[in-house]
Image (cartoon, rainbow, N blue to C red; front, top):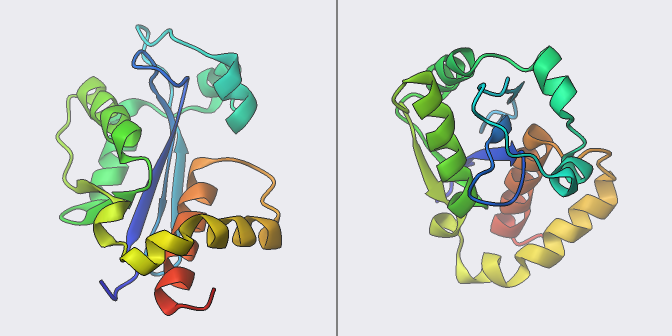
Amino acid sequence: MNAIPCIIDVEASGFGSLSFPIEVGVALPDGKRFCSLIKPQPDWQFWQFEAQALHGITRELLDKQGRPVIEVCQELNQLLAGKTVYSDGWVVDQPWLITLFHAAQHRMAFTVSPLDMILTETQMSVWHSVKQQLIEQSSPTRHRASADAALIQQTWMVTRDGST
């Protein structure tokens, strides 16, 4: 794959199977980003403070600034219709996206695929060290969905170009 991939990342209320999506971020090939907090559904109750400490998003913030699931799904579908987006945490991001779209009673108009599907062996062999270098160079102040998606996309570009 030579074209810059579209990357998606999801932050959640916790680390287990009862957790739910609280923020979704996308890094588009043209450098633009999409990010949205998600207002929890009434039956979404599972919350882990360890996850909150990592992403810095409180339940109170979601209640005040989170957007309704239907709006988030509609915007994601409009932005990503017909595209394949890639996730470095597909095993958790995909179920969280399914939870989000199920709550909105919407069908995903895009496909989510594991990032590994587009990585070469060379990219895989240097991925973690390059990503760590980029983190150290940029000093991101927050572990949030769109920033994480952009970092993943940037790591893909650097490892693809071989400029490690």
